[in-house]
Image (cartoon, rainbow over all chains, first blue to last red; front, top):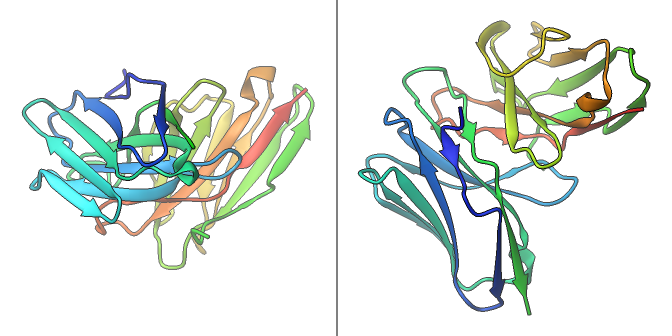
Length: 114
Length: 113
């Protein structure tokens, strides 16, 4: 049962443009959401997170938006850079339950071309 | 560097064999998680330990087992290995209560031949 879904396996964007990665979830108990970036042969690296009490969190070029009513979140990268090319995983947790277990989507491969 | 250390980084073994993957969490982290990533698969949660006790179980096969020791390092034991067990195995750790952000090691790449 995939509780976190990333329906786009890949996204290709030109350098300098905006990258928008999307994620949907089904469990209404999820109250904490994260994005991880993963380069080949490396472990996922934490990128940005958002609590369910917020609808937006920004960190430099990265902004995460949360729409609780739609059970949808998105990651915006502006401007996109070639070094952003990686697999991006969306993750969610219910902090009241299992002490931190994260549910991951299958990932979206972002390619930023010059 | 996330502070989570995994060994070995690469491992090639034959079907039917048994291997042990080792993980040292970040200093101060009490929770350890194991994830598996196969080709075309996302990060599949296997198991979580908190301060030595099993806390949550995911899609972990009966041939696999794990434990967390008093010094908080963890081991994932994979036995009766099959070709389909070839994957990247990630360990992650977290300070429970710190927003549930978990930090991953670089993974152990297991190839079963």
